[in-house]
Picture 1 (cartoon, one colour):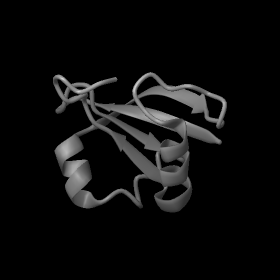
Picture 2 (cartoon, rainbow, N blue to C red):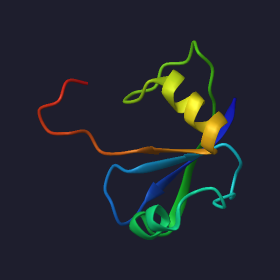
Picture 3 (cartoon, rainbow, N blue to C red):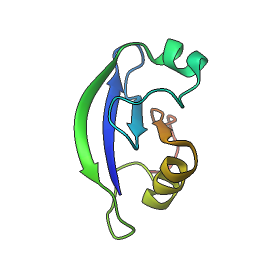
Length: 81
């Protein structure tokens, strides 16, 4: 499954994964407002075998299939990785 990852310039360590490049139509307006101008940082091919640094690839893929986007928030201080 292909996706494009965008970083937020407003919120440190916050990333938005999109199933379709440049298609923000399914992302809620309130989220886009909070996120700010999305800056593309990476294109990625996801698969169940692929490991992501901070996210469960299965959850990311499910969100991309169901809603077309996934939001990665910064880690919570003290939380296990």
